[in-house]
Length: 511
Image (cartoon, rainbow, N blue to C red; front, side, top):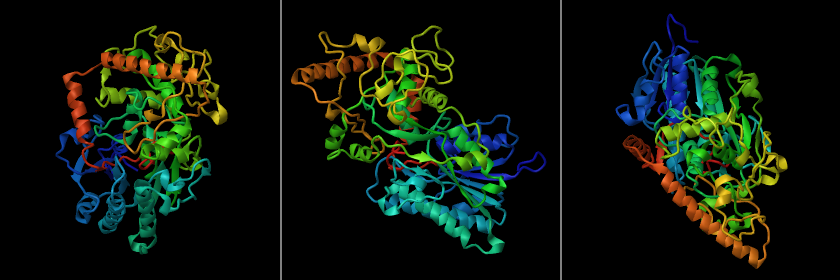
């Protein structure tokens, strides 16, 4: 443990990433000397924030260059370190043509780092950031624990890379001679959400960004296990010194939430600030048809309406994470951070987290509670309700199956609409964006020809008005444009090594 007299040094790989940045901040606050490895220490756009994360720290962050497949670069990075936290891993924003482009650097990166730890002779413990997918793989609708491993032949490139990299780490330390041994702790976080303090794009940002930008316009019937990124970072710091953590895996998961619940939380906070978050879906049959020619639609079918439960006993009992943060608050704070950071445009109505008008519609929210006009109702329909409890549909679902009948939305209905009938979205509306984000969908009902004609009118005209309203609401400042250019630049590479670990592979929301 770090002391005032002689602080121990910890190496954080992937220091500039979403998770890595939070770990650097907490390590500094804990009194450690922090060395962070990045791909380019001279890239100010990506590393500048690391120098100001903890102004009160006794020691500034030391940045060093290291590449996963460059064995020599790890020797100097690990030198004189007592602890190592390894978060860096290649992450594809789109499915790679060759899976080995992701798998090979992940596995080689782990082994190169561990070899350097042996040579350094100062490292006591390595904390490896694995992933929830290295626990559950393609399994859905089940309960899993640290004893579970997936069948690698059924995994996508990212999930396979995390699984094989973790196995390589366990095999490596198992074969060490007694005089070479150091302790290994593995953490398996599921999808991480929460405030962004880094400057590079990652899938966690993309998930919330797309909801705020109403892209796609419809919600998948999908369940997401999640953890606050700050809790995940805190778990890494605790894992450095807790004796019982050595030699074990630890799932990091706070709770599960339906994707429509996430959307409802965002809508309650941001609708009055000019962000029209989606609230409806499409029939599963439509997604099934779309899956023939759209990869993202194909990915959502196996996880449709299924909940995977992660046993987080070790997180609570061993890592002492007994009071994890409320994920509703994490979602709201993350949304504010990506707007402030330039990942999402500021609308003209945007007031900011600390500038909300008193008495404004839908807000401000308290502790992330879902306000009346966005509350998921039983069966998943989003309607006006005074109930402050969480939406409770079948198995706790809160999946949007009908368009919200509230405030501005109700004004946009075409004259003569059969407004009492539930709306279904057209099959063509399945998102064409990243393969990493599954298309949206919900179950539908058979309709008469007359109802279908009414629905067609209702599903096209309001959409045009929505787009016009969103265009009118959003504006760019010169500062924001610069921020977004920096964010966009980070996505140029098909595979980015940034330490971001969403535990979700090519389907970021699949867990």
